[in-house]
Amino acid sequence: MLDDIAVIGRDSRTGGYRRFAWSDADMELREWFAGEAAGRGMELVEDGNGNQFAWWGAGDDALLIGSHLDSVPDGGAYDGPLGVVSSFAAIDQLRAEGFAPSRPVVVGNFADEEGARFGIACAGSQLITGALDPAKALGLKDRDGLTLAEVLTARGRDPRAVGRTDLLDSIGTFVELHVEQGRSLIHSDAAVGVATAIWPHGRWRLDFCGEANHAGATLMEDRHDPMQAYAATVLASRRLATDAGARATFGRLEVEPGGTNAIPSRVRAWLDARAADEGQLDDLVDALVHQARAAADPDGTTVTLTTESVSPAVEFDAPLRDRLAALLDAPVLPTGAGHDAGVLSPHVPTAMLFVRNPTGVSHSPEEFAEDADCAAGVDALASVVRGMA
Ligand code: HGY
Ligand code: MN
Ligand code: MN
Ligand code: MN
Image (cartoon, rainbow, N blue to C red; front, top):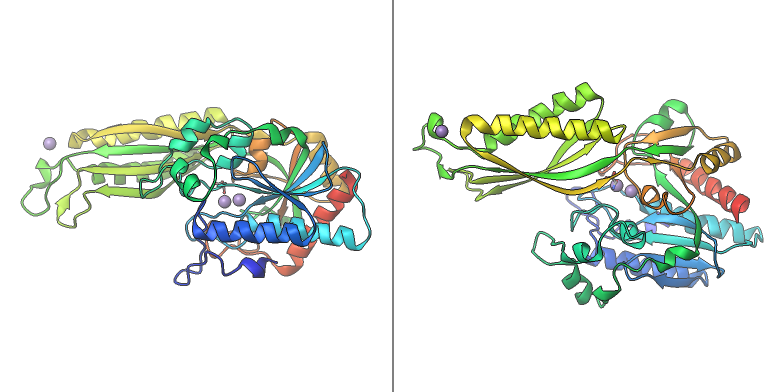
């Protein structure tokens, strides 16, 4: 089934995927999801937040499986879709053996997990759990200045339905299967692992403001150049994160006005920072902002800081985690990546399964999983459903 969607949203230049929330590619994937549900006689429900749910059976205490279908810019083929495709495949496997669940089994496609278009990760799962204020979400703008409200309306959705949380009431457990975004399973030689925890992580925007001026006529000592301060901050972030055993990434940059022969007036930089616990994360970001201000000071540039979204640390439910690790005879492993399962875990018993990624690379076209390991992931998910539904 991954092959069925392989062409959707793929950039032929880079081989990566650009499947941003409510984009044409995302709409094609939504139609694909609806078709998979219909083809299996599963009832399709879309909550007001854009999350899609395909129901096998009806009622409460449903076992939710699935993941997301959107991507980061030039993302890989597996991050998200592997969980959705494996869920449908596990249901096919169970039905073929005549398994009849005693509780509803639901395949979910969470909206905008990557936050690549509107800037907040896990937007769909944060909305259904009440963790994200609907008004804030609707006011988020993409790079073209379109708000989520305008985009939803253009896609025939009612923005007033955003923020509905009632559908979560009928979910009893969530188990998300995901390609591993790291190298633990390679070292453990297992095809499938069980998640223990998700690091706290957040996104911040640092605006370095200076003075536009002529690139040739302005002496170096007379410059108020925000790009210099930004560059010093990026270098400092590597040292700070390395020393702290944490992670800091500057992956998005906007330079104004952006002329080759003009010193910039402003540099807007997005930071993704993660650490093993909230205290470490706070310390890392504080130290980084301190360095940014120090780097800006000699040039007289100023640094303004905007906090966009911070996800807390997540320890998965130990009983469920340990039960699945025993059931699957699988290793348990932490992850620095964020997931919808992390957002749901304070609300319903949640677990995550990881499928080995021999490259260890993710959020890149290099992301990969062997067919045999993907099949092992489907078997594992089928075992979980057999054991829990
Ligand atoms: O950023 C993350 O960790 C996730 O892939 N959204
Ligand atoms: Mn991702
Ligand atoms: Mn993901
Ligand atoms: Mn000066």
